Image 1 (cartoon, helix red, strand yellow):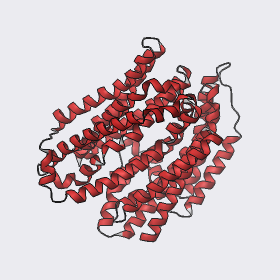
Image 2: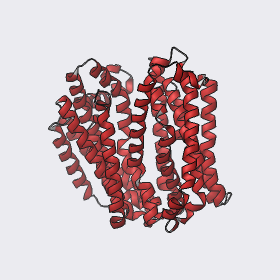
Image 3: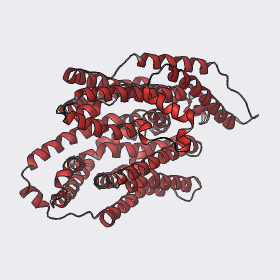
Image 4: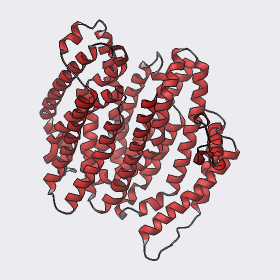
Length: 509
């Protein structure tokens, strides 16, 4: 277990450092230095890449993730690696062919409002190719229990290189074309570093792809699973990133550049979700395998209230400081404030429903996630097409949040029908009341001028002051209302000083 703890700790630190770097530079520094159109172009290239990579990836990374424990003692892993690399290469070639074939139709959608994208249309092909292989090698690293290096490359190295690239563009060391092609080069360079690490550091091997087909009796079942995961990934990627490719087609790259700042801030509410999900999912799977549904129900309720508690806390501070946050941005970004409210509300609702995806995926009813993901994707497409022309970026935010809410409701219905339990309790109402009261009090706190004629510093100090007051107003009643036993135990460790003196045991956390 030592290696798992070390890698998990390193990965968590890298993730949070990466998020911090990204938020500081891309949300608060670069909007003052780079035009909204260029920030929108970067966002469009990223969103198109994220949507397209699932197609040539063919669900092969999910296959090795599921069957690695069965294959790892044999040569099958090496056979599958070779087969996967060959199949993904063919997939990329086919993708490039169709992407070229439909170039006129796609370009036509962006020519009027996002003309800056048109000269770089074909840049998507190398971006998709490198990301397809990068995802596969990241999964392979995870299976080898070596996730810190790939995470460091993705979260830190890529962001730092992109920051340096943008500064090179700002100070006219790079022209427009060099800047955009440099953006693609960053993805290519980090991919080759990851490839070298996988081969040299992890002993990645790939040979005899035909033997995976000829010496594998379960290949049909494995491909069936991979096909399901391919469909699931396509649906989820479209649902998550469609707003970022439709918005510039209707309203231009500048609008996307503005939209993505509050979008990222609103999504930060869910950052703790990934860590809790990573820790909890193996326990839930084990309980389901042992048919201990009472334990699953107890875990579901305990984890859900903790997730909702964290979500309400972050939501309260974020919404209460929204005006201060937008005061740190150029005035043109003020139109994105409603986007922050809408996205944050959707993510809070998602947190409220707990680990419903993980429960269904760990059970024999995992196909329902695929069906519901198709519904979510179709709903996202329809809502984006209907709402963006009428409501602009607020429509895009509504499309994302409404689809997410409906998706969660449907998943909870499946869980209740199949397992006869849900995650909700009376403490949800308590948390909502505490959040509402805290936001109500903070709403009447005036904006204070600590330093004369220094709006930026005053905004920062107001955000810090409101956050400290908001934390006290939220945490104290949560503790005394005993909303969460886990939170109260952890809070007692803090106020007793044990957690700082090392006088606690791991099971006390």
